Image (cartoon, rainbow, N blue to C red; front, side, top):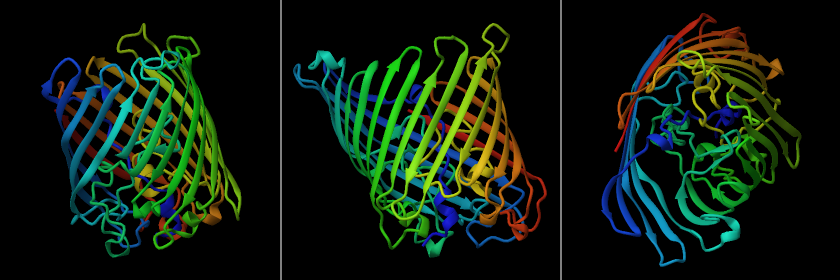
Length: 440
């Protein structure tokens, strides 16, 4: 079984927004479309220091590469005035090469090809005017699911490799890239259009051993307006596979999570506000919570449109991060490239402050800097105090290719021997990565 700290891990889903995704049209008529889809991502990584999470690495550095290719078909077909049927089927081939990642979750020998997406759905179109365009959307099958900004659920994206338990949790490598994101079994009913009141009812089941094959029911209710979105989320985790669950993951059986969230600009053009409070009732142990508040401002009248934001987040000692993931860009919800992926605190037992600054010297180029300060709440559970600075760029070279280099400097307060996670010392770690992503 996974050791207790690993329940706090997930992987950073790659930043390929829907706005940059594309497809090759194979067939089209007035009410039908058949598309071929291709998504290929490759990353090069180096860390001057290693971390103790897997228990298999020694002091030193790690250099590795990750990649995946996702390929398949998607379709939609009008149903003569009674809505639209849609669906997709995609395969995904992934791998890790070299030393494996700096926490030891992969060892560089992972190679896997499996189905990723396989789902069917129906949208109502204008069938129910009172609910708006596509006011009813019903889907089922294997698909990626995101709730809010990913604070609780952003796909089933934990992609461990062969570095743990003799490969028992291997999902095919590509740990940082989070190659596989789809829940294995889903049934999703979305009610309401793109504005006003809307909600979701979902049943989700994971086949991910690292997530103990968690099964859960999810309900959301939200109001969407130009000024922002306010939402409620309820998650009832009803089952885990005890053969793969850590002691902490066993507490998911019967655990209920409630959250209140809001995001938007409150009607002020250059303002960004976001926040969420989540409470967890664990049936036999404790009540946990997590929350954050974030504010940002875009200087839209200044050259290069500088943007600056500040976020404070707090996660209680036994908080279960569930299926959080990458949503609004670097730093959400992987706080620090080194800390968020390899060293910890992995959004549990910690208070985290984040300052972010970006500029856009070109329409297709954003350059950013992030600072994180990590403060452990209960140091008897381990000490992940430290701070990190990350410098990065997002360059969308053309319609099909994006390049994202990043350099990070991570300074832990304690080494692994002193209760931290960095092996052999608490020196500064110079970390680097570059990601190439293409879609067709």
